[in-house]
Image (tube, rainbow over the protein chains, first blue to last red):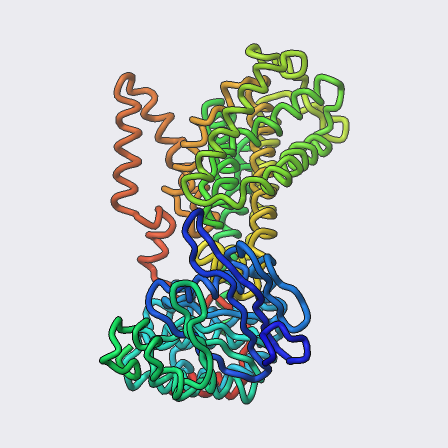
Length: 254
Length: 337
């Protein structure tokens, strides 16, 4: 079987033997996986499994204790977040992360400018702004938006940088049920129009099943399972990791 | 969009224009008045304004710096030492008093700009204290605890600037330069500094090389401090460590925050009101410090955004901050809804 480090596999993002420790506390160790071109990979695991730390390490916000991260053929291990972003690996944040005192227009403008893109990027983000009902609110300040729209604005900003790889940290967290379909719309744009590869950390198992052909389950800092969500989510060890009991099914309850 | 765009530029330029006009107006004072108290007060206000503009630049990156007096000392002592060695040309000294502190700030910034919050505040406070020690420990260069006295009259194109009028002209000229530098940097990098101030992590994740802009801001703030130090030494005709203590930084920070940190007019308004108040209350003997403190508390309680910020909020001129153009279809959508 080919491993994640196999050079014959094409990958937008490749993680090899990645480890992170804070002093004596081990968050995760020896994580290896790959994200293929145009692929959507779900990463799930109980709270404290190290999912957000994994994103922080991949995008350069935290240095790894060991291992390597490759973006295409480039080793981006230990590079600064802005350098990693400039190379096409961009993240979203678990909490809403926008410039709250700036208008929606200014938020998007900053994303376009900071990523070194030109004015033509506005026409790229226009359909997303329309889809998320943000066009009518272009001149509203970010903190005046409802929570759901703040989250979507954060995603639009990540999209406006024209990334090759998107790391989404719990994009559905805090969204109302009816708002969660917007994540589907966003991913459709990101994959089909922008051609992004996407890694999603998420607790919404319906969303994971819907959007991710492949998932990784992380528990206690190691990969517990990997594969098709339909098969993986019924595995007893995955259910035990999430719920602490084999009597319950993981699907839909996490 | 064009209308909004020009409105945005106008708003951005309004505070800058006002600041520059205020400083330019000072040139009129020596023509219409020969009151030495007014000259002295204006000198103090302008020097405080320059120093608090240095603080303001740092505040725009969400960094509270106590290093302003240290950079003022570098600028001031540069002028004192150079002028005693015959280098009295104002143009040269202005350049030196800006560039030297800025150059010192570059390696220093590389070391300390990774710090945030309290840690950065403490390190900049210690920096100023260390510079004090250096000033005392190098008497051959700085005169040690005696400072450097007997600074000769400076010259501009061969003309000696020795009388009180000339001192005020020079201070006003330096203040004008400081305002122009601040306006140029803030206008050019407005969006970058605003993003760093509000959400540095997000700015980085979108591709902004935050560290580079912080270094630029730190060097600019250092240069502005250096110019303020030049003006202070020129006014006092002496360079002494007591002019550049870390405690003085508290005043400059107070001027910037009370005046308002949202625009460069804030530090100037803060400096004008508080320096004038200090002079006024200074005549009230033992009550002066208490009255000064009460004034600060009152202003902070009433005007949380600073004086200028509060006035701006009252008028509530809400305009978009971006000057970007968006596609016509997007604009039409926005206007139609």
